[in-house]
Structures are given as C-alpha cells and as structure tokens.
Image (cartoon, rainbow, N blue to C red; front, side, top):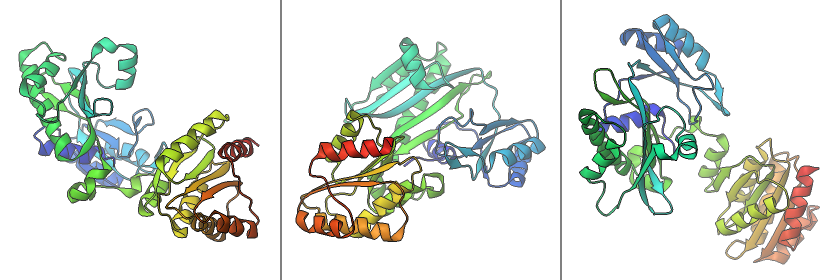
Length: 377
C-alpha cells in the first residue's frame, strides 16, 4: 500500500525527522489560503501514487498566494500516469544548498532491510546506481539487532564531510529506520534530503510503501489507504480477494495459483506476446470471484485476448466455467476468450462451456499460443 507524500511526512515527523510544515488543499481557494499562511513562497505538489510528478507538471513553485491558487487550479484534475489529482500539498519553499538521497527497503536477496544513500539526490536513484555506481553506498541491516549508531554514522559519512552535517544525518538515518519498522513498510525514502545554507539537514520529500501483510495488525496505517488514488482495478481485485498486478501487455491472464500464473506469463512471452496482468484467483474460487476477475481483466482497454489457465486441485473447474458464463451475462466482453480447464470436475466444466458455445484446450502450450495469436490479430 502506497502512502501519499503528506502521509509519509507525518510518519517521518512522528519519528522525529525534520520535515517542513505542509497542508492539503482540495480547491484552488484552499491552496491560496494556505500559501498566505506560509508567507506566499510555497511549493504546490500533486498527491498521487505515481512517480514523475514534476515532469508531468504536478509540482510547481509559487511566488505568492495568487500564484499558488493558479498552480493548484492547473494541477487539480490533472491526470498523471492514469491517475487524477484530487488534492495538492502546499508547503513552504526551502533554500537548498545540497541534495542527497536516503532510502531503506526490503532486499529480497539478503531477506533484510537495506539502506541506500547517495550524494546525488533529487533524481532517480536507479539512474545513479546504473550510470555512476561509485556514488551509491549500500548497507544491509541485521534485523536481529537493528541499525546501530556507528552504522548510521558510516552511511552519513558517505554523504558529507562536515562533522555537524554527518551528526544530523546519522540521527535522521536512525529515525528513518524507526519509521520504516514502526509502520511495517517495505520501502521508505527521502529524495531529496537537503542541507540549507544555515547548515540544517531536512527531508523535503517523502515516499513510503507499506507491506500489505502488515496492515491487519496496524489499523492506524491501514486507515491511510486512499482508494481514489489507486487504479480502480486494484481496488476491485482487493475487495474480491484476488491477487492482481496490472502490466503493460495485451494478453489478459486469469490463473489459479501464483506458480502457474508465473509459468503462464513466461509462456505468453515465449510465444511472442506480452501479459497484461498477473491475476491469481486463488485455490478455492467460486463463480462470483471468477466473474469479478473477468470484469477486471476486461476493463483494461489494452487487453486484446483473455486467457484462462486453470488447474483444478482444490479449485473446481465447474465453478470457474460457471463464473465465466456469469461474467458474460453481466458485461459485454469484446476480447476473445480462450480457456484451458483441467482437474477437478473437468468433464462437468467442459459440458458447461460447450453448452455456452465455448471449447477448451487440453494443452497449456496450445491455449497460450492461441491467446497470443488472437491478441496479435
């Protein structure tokens, strides 16, 4: 679950990280009033779960309250990577001497939190790591002991030469780790972490992603979810109990089991196609869940064919077949559907599909190859 910048900053502030003040505006008039409160010179920042806000015109500097109003009017309603901006953060401008990057995330290879720091802040850290790897320092935290003070100083020392800046930054690094662990985050980053001409270190941006598996025991964090700021398909999938990730391809995939889903996506690419999504209906599906899955896939305008690949162990093939028929009775689906159902109640499922005018494939290769062919056609 992604947090908005203003929500992440509040988590940082709770941990003691120096964060500039800021307030949310949902109308241009509110933005103007907040700017007046802060003295006029403010930054107006779109609040959407997307990177590249600045490049899309979602971050603007205002020199006075009227300017803040104008920028808010232009940003509110703006679409950034398919997401509509419904609110903006208005925060005072800061005099910036230097910019750095500071982040911590879960590293799957080491199965532990890893800190990444770089003196090249304000730009994509992936670009820096790829083109100038010597400007990046990494440190894997032993979760048994947490981040120790000397380790934080070692990271801070990579960013600055000034002992006072190192001291402030080491403290912020420890506080960032506290915010990371206390919220059940999978990622927390400050980009940029700035120094001011007066020698102060501040976090003027904030980004956090929370591990979905942590939310059941952190209701205060779960309450921060903003469904209006996430793709509608992801909201519908979560409510239906489906595991769903949207991708950029043209073959919509509906599969049961994560392993089979990954294998199916690999096979789509093998035959020259691109999967449009990862969608796992789980081990014990019912017709309503299957119908919801089909509706979610069909709502993607990029989908040119829909592939069902079901291995019925716990999942009953006849339930899946009934779900497909039920979904087709609810919505119009223009993309062709190809189906492979094998396993529990397979014969009954094939009969249901045949009565509805469908046929099913026995081979996984055959059904995937046909889905790719139809998508291309």
